[in-house]
Length: 146
Image (cartoon, rainbow, N blue to C red; front, side, top):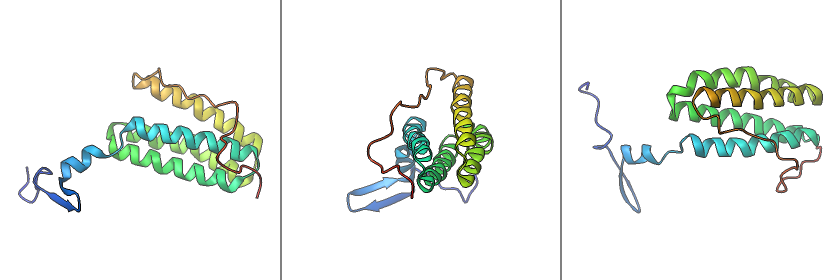
């Protein structure tokens, strides 16, 4: 270990609730399961926002999805390269369709993203994880056009 490196167990942060080590804080960070659950919700909203003509909400959800995948790549570096490819090849075309307000292009890109996620899950021995778009929109957003 280099001299200027301090083990995370020795670096302490003090809060009003007590002290935590950097290692303890790192262990509390969301893992893949928590981040992917949030991503699934955002991907669901993304679809119905675009379908309803609320392109601003769709764009927001697409950008937030990219941020979640960046966090996942940091938290789980072994997935980082594949996540970068997924963002470029799947979320990139979604973003372009959203900016163009092109529903047919959006829907095709969206479906390709689902297929690609199945491929990546299988690659990492998690083929039991298969996103399926619910047949109804989420009820907590106004998905109409702006």
